[in-house]
Each structure stands twice: as structure tokens, then as C-alpha cells.
Image (cartoon, rainbow, N blue to C red; front, side):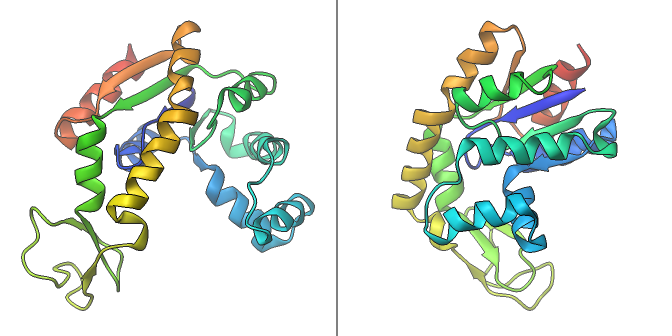
Length: 207
């Protein structure tokens, strides 16, 4: 299956993506990851992307789309793949339709106020990266590695989170209507417990 997972920052895409890719034996493709890898490897397209990144500019759609095209053409994608973080706009979605067939789009729907609380309350271990929430933390030390201090990431303050959610709503949320019109969208209530969200996601993929 060729899949896309949609959801605002903090909606739980990472957790559900891991479960989906494990169950179906398909790769989890993050455009951010393949972009950074191409830049690191110094590929021709990576060098082009780096020119924009060094200027602090957005990497043009045509470069991102070409990166995706190259990635999904690899051997490990023959059984399918899960796209996360792409497409981000209707224009990217229309371009994607020209190079591949998407079977299903899973949309994790979470109230924006809940997302704001999730993200601003998130704390991360500065040693191992384990994630916590202030509502369940016991002290300011990581209980997993026992070494790190729990800190708030710079992009998890209220102003930064609000901006990220606004950008998502303005640019990416219209994709929901795009894929709904194509009959490919399946929306899951992402405000539930992680286990229930996971069961609902698997149910819509198996349907």
C-alpha cells in the first residue's frame, strides 16, 4: 500500500507511523530525512537543496518532489511506503499524483487547543531524547537514562507552537478536502488514548 499520514504537529504521526510501517513492512519516508541525507551525501539534488537552505529559503517544490520520486523508486518501496511530511500543499499533492498512485490517506484529527497543550507541555531529555509531559513528570530528571535533565525545546514555547499550528492549518489542512474528494481520506480521532488511536488507524487501513 502507498500511504500518506496527515496531522498537525503533536498529533502523534511518529508513533502511528512506526506501528504502520512495522505491520506492513514498508518504509517510513520523511521528506525532511531524505533532504538532510542528500545534503549530507553531496548528491547533485542535495547540493541544489543546500543552496536554498543556506540562504534560509524554502526548498522549491520541484526539488522536494524529485527527492520523493527518487526515494519511492527504490527497491524497498516495491511493496509500498508511508509518506510523512509530504505533501504539504495542494500543489505538491497534484505533482505527487503525476508520479505515483496513493491508495489511502490517514488523517489524525486532534483539537488544536489540545495540541497546544501537548506541545507546550512537552519536555525532552537533553541526554537521550526521551519525551515527557509536564502533567506526568516526576521531577526534572530522565527516568529512562537517569542522566539527562528534562528541558523544553526552543520550538515548543507557546508563540512558536501557535505559529506552527497556524502554518499547518493554512497550508496543509486543505489537503484533507483534496483527498476526501478523491475518496482516499480516512480520518481517525487522534485525541484518544494512543492504543485506541492505533486500533482505529489499523481498522481503516484493513477496511
